[in-house]
Image (cartoon, rainbow, N blue to C red; front, side, top):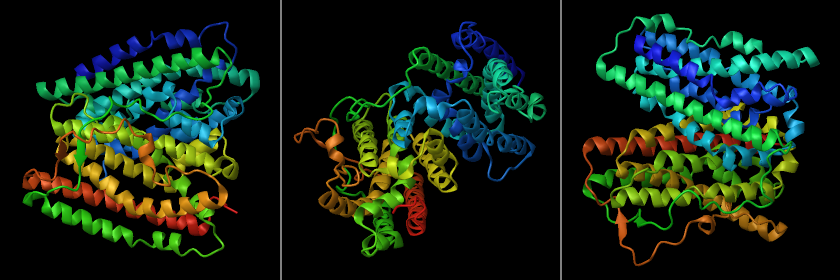
Length: 504
């Protein structure tokens, strides 16, 4: 393990020379300007809670090494609230002037924040990268702690000056957090004497260096933000009407057929998919949507529950773009995955437009910190984000395109009953109020890439033989997706009946 710690120390020194810190420490920059880089930090800093709760933590620690990792995660998961407190104390709500939809645009659509979204998917898949090995997990975590300490060393000096000038303390950027960020895992003593064989040592060094490359790219992005927005005094703003996202892929791909012939080895999977869809159709939430009575209009019914699905729908782009897609597709099935994923990445633009058409900014009245708190700290959105972690791990852990196609097929099939109901409500709301709800109205194809050539050969994946082991994985994917869907439908029913969002 000593070689890992040596690399960590070297990379700490390397990161300390990053030009961001020169920008932050420039004497001609007014306080608190160097600390206003929190918006590009938000995806990582708020999402780090999820990494600690559902990625790094062992559900049932089997030994002292795993228990040591777990103890550290409980303290680290509390930092998101400190981050939000600084956001408010630094006046970022006022400086940004963001509504809820502006904040969602920044998190899930803004080009400047793309790096953070890609890295966010990697962080959610780190348990796949280390294969649950606590020695490898320590290598990743220790590098993160060490590099985080470099940033907070610089930020805390500026935060102290801010406090001296204003009397306002900053718990995240200031000395309180620095005291927690020692640059080492709390459990380091357990790991220092551990010996790694050559294969594991090589893997540990590679994982640790991956974290360094990610942190370097993050700081590059933060510096770009600082120069583009803080130095000019112009807060980032979404375009008046977001363009349809056709940036994710390379044009039309093969014509995938999900409902073609089924190989005997895959018949149990098709039966399971059909049974789970039928069971989902009968969920009480859908009964409420269809039998809610005259007191709740179609528009109000949508407004009552749609905010709960924000993280799923807006984050679906990143799941498909960075977890499902193949960087180097080879076979027809690889290309089929990519073509399908490219279309799915476009849907969150339609949802973003629907959010505004539903008037949710005005109804909710959330500013940027309110929106961040709901998205990342609300106990019910916790369930949604935990399920996103599960989907990400399933995609990244299984490189076989047939398995990824089954995962995608399960996700899309689980959504069919949902969109059948939202389409009926959207059609009614559009007819009565004149709003346009393309996402909820199930008109997703208007955002898709160029249509696939009808003459292109169809690509099937259910007609291919599957081993028993692969079939078991695919069945687990189907069950996981529909279990998550049922859980989230229960939440939707709860928030609709309780009128959590105060829809009048």
